[in-house]
Length: 168
Image (tube, rainbow, N blue to C red):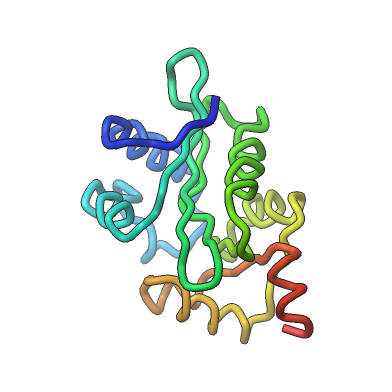
């Protein structure tokens, strides 16, 4: 079952994100990796800043989480994670499909440039990596992230964004 999160889910969202983010160890720049990967204060800030979290729940346990954030004229997919023990079962794909059904604006995703598995996942689901120049413009326009994260990330866009921005 996929459902929108509420405050009762906070600790579970926190646990899923930090469990799944263990995949970043040794992959993303060490200066961007902290322990925990996302502290509770940062998660609370993301929620207060408009990230709506959705979860995949099975047998009463939360197995995956994905955020949706409406910013100006686009929707961002934010903080997409599946518990390590539940990965490779299509949970991320189900969440992504569900969230994309909820919006009528172009969808953008930012992820670490060295997280090749994440990039492949989004490409498998119809997203394409934007150019380096466009990435920097989009990250500065739609995200609130440190400059170092801009340098070490990529942005992927769905078909509707590409249709509106032909040649980008």
